[in-house]
Length: 305
Figure 1 (cartoon, rainbow, N blue to C red):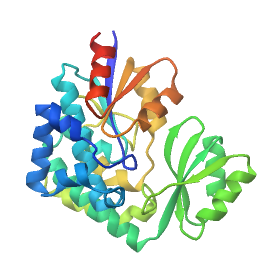
Figure 2 (cartoon, rainbow, N blue to C red):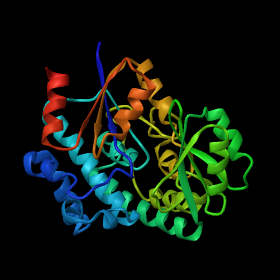
Figure 3 (cartoon, rainbow, N blue to C red):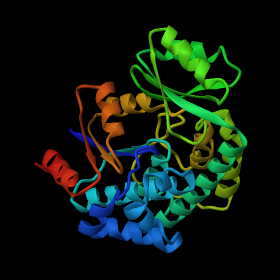
Figure 4 (cartoon, one colour):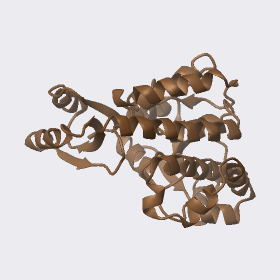
């Protein structure tokens, strides 16, 4: 039996005008944007008219990306495609949790706004940087990181691709060590060392914020970045709080989903980064993205025939 997964895009793929076609062509997507606008006025204008620079500021990026991710998922569902499983990459996990009903859309959007504030503050207080390491095994990347006081593998993306976070004064030397091992290091245009111990204060702030929120049982299995396994109601708050300061186990998540029978992955949100990571993890599955009307039509053709 074929099984479909929605995977929700993470921070970094944002671009001006993202989500505009979904808003104009899908009532379900429009409803998501309108919800976000009610809670955080200006979100729609930022998504549709904001500059690349404006959209790259964490306190703008996260709410806007969340809105587009959830709007895309709503449009795909409206088109008659329902997932058997869902997962989200970093920020995308909050949209996934909302789509699965663990949080209402409104509560999840408020959580994302708070998450963005906390992560931005932590990044300001602990100056760090991130780099994608290519062509090296995860073991080799971990070995290189151990040479430094403040360097960690933080995103296990797919075979041959691991993202590291490090202090600003160590990242360049680490990248040189990667090159010496015949690997490739690409510094990322991000404002902090996310998913590392540098985000500990953000994690604590999220835990405090989540204390006052009531969660619900997931209606669809949601695979967590922290464990690469499905959420349960009992561990949901811990997973959401700890996620920001711990690695994203994306490759293992994809492998676990395939082991459960998943053969079609639909990236909902912005860009097709996750489509690429899924395809690099397995050549046996189908992976498409939905971010506008054309890609929505393509996904319908692939899944519904």
